[in-house]
Length: 254
Image 1 (cartoon, rainbow, N blue to C red):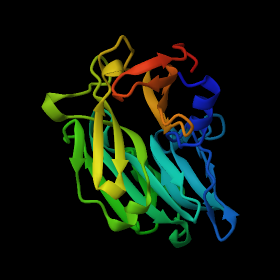
Image 2: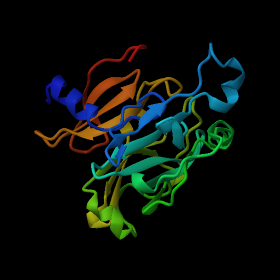
Image 3: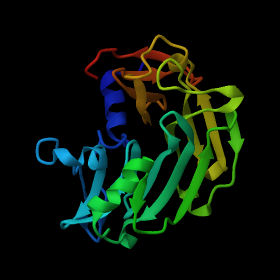
Image 4: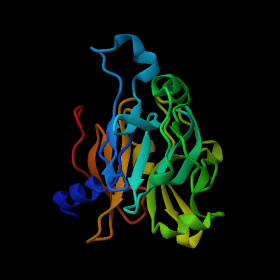
């Protein structure tokens, strides 16, 4: 069993979903970007539908990116960064998109509050730059190892652990009493992606409206995989990556 403090440290080092997790160390030419949530219920109540849930990537008062719900932003330390997010709607997620960007190529977005409406409706993102490389991981992939074509630029990444969804074998999610969450392990150097059905959660006694896993990391000292969930707390996976060995706590405030 991994000490809780080690699990917490591992999870603190990986990105969480926007808009709830906004910490970033993304920089360009030595200057750090900030992630800013533009919607303020008290200051701007009329823009609820347009701005709520969005995050702006800003530098010196200009906006260089707009991220919708559940976008993950992982800086790589050399002014490049990886972003991944769900493809499709909350009730019909068809896969994950992973893209590699160079922060130095980002251009300012004119009229970001206007552009935000399209991002809000698509639950996606807007960056005024072409990605160095991108990859779509379909939700239809079967469980286990899948060999896929991966752009060469992505092979510098050792491993990406992400949460996705599965539509194979008729699996569906309705956001209420059906869940189809998967753990997705991308190994670019092997040209492989591994899909792990989250049996512990999908077939467990959970509230799929208010609970769900949102962060996952490999704890470096043990090599074990740990996760965190909304109103779930922290948990440790067993070797199958389909079941958990322990969950820290289950309560409404996590």
